[in-house]
Length: 299
Length: 317
Image (tube, rainbow over all chains, first blue to last red):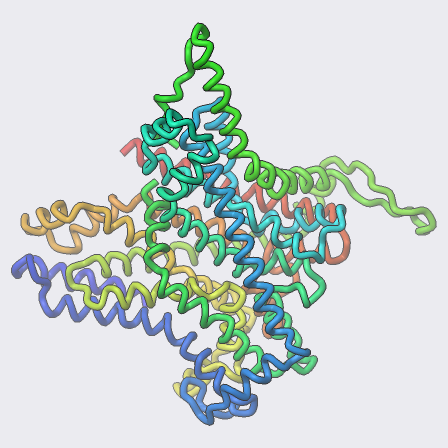
């Protein structure tokens, strides 16, 4: 693949230099398209396979051509997924929604407050506090999971909703993004005017700062929502009770339990079902992702 | 960090004589603390405390009496656990394995991401929006769900790739001992190239269009514009994505953990985090903590070291 990639810019060089600079010549346009299409195929084939396989009964998974539909049994598969183990799959989805929505909402509020304070107040230790938070961005959440588990076992917090929710609320990256955005977008004069009018600091924050910061806060919410939804190690360690588990942990346990009678088509259809809402949400909300990523990269 | 504070000037500390101003400043200090407190408390208990706790635990060990008649006692072990870890060949090879994977996979992935971002940014690209969305899509799949998907895609009995290659007369098992690390690398590349591409692409979009147009007018080919103007301009984005990738590789867990079900060559201590979890599973919490501390330290040294190195190099140029 890399050899194909490197040939395209060469093509565009030799062709682009000779002709009019305003419109790229056909050769280079074709070359660029071919390379980009190849990588698009690489990206799409696995997901296409997941879609096709979710429509197959267990037997057909092994016997029919794996990249095209045979007999479409998708409704039977979905019914089986939701019936397995007394409807545990629905439990998992609901749990994932609870952890992600509640965790991300709380996280966004805390990040907004902290980012606002770090951007708009000058107090002793401010830079130190910000640097510590920034340093924490460099150590990933997975690394805290095991120490947290050891700590939570001591205080008997494992196997509760709290054991997953509480750590999920902390997002150093959210604070970082909120601070950058607040510093760049909230004029000091507006805050000052609010004070002159006698508004309390809290009121200024909720009524003035939050509306201005809202585009960044949407990004913070989305990032944290997906981070929590994708979390695997933390809930895997914390939760023994499968009624409390999110869908990632649940599906992975189905994958492991093949030998105990969970057929492949259940796991595949379950994976497909858990992914569809996310892909749709991504496509719909993608401009917020770009905004957030852009903010992160111009630092 | 170097950001100036637009509102800061209005809160400059007042001179001692201005009694009212001082009270106001104190009120502001108090509000700042109130705003920081909720995050600060959770940050301390959920991030700093576990780190401290792991560090503390790593200096102790549980000693059981020979006959097992007395209850086990926790005794100070000094650096004993660390010595054990350094001599633990399984743990050391897990570190080395992840390091080797990162050395190969991160440059491949970021090279691809940069190439795709440049192509997407070039004048020759068509269907930009569609391609951009397509490349970013794997990021929408939770890592462990993607891992489950790939575990099927690699498994010989259902894999379309194994079947396709068999038609060509090739017998490839993606889960065999010498291929499985590459297969894991492919899973990461598939999942994260688009994410990194988008960060680099966003930075490319920030380059003023007149700049590159002028260069093209002067007869610079697309390749030279990319090499001499665009790539230097997206340097901060490349540094950022490299640091993210180092951190991501160090915590490798989901992919090998799921593949373990179908690839017997993946040992329970295949990656450092798996090794630490294995220690916790047999209730050796002190050793699990030690392994976590070592991994966190190495990751921090690598990512922070790279950041400083890249920044210094950027300053001297």
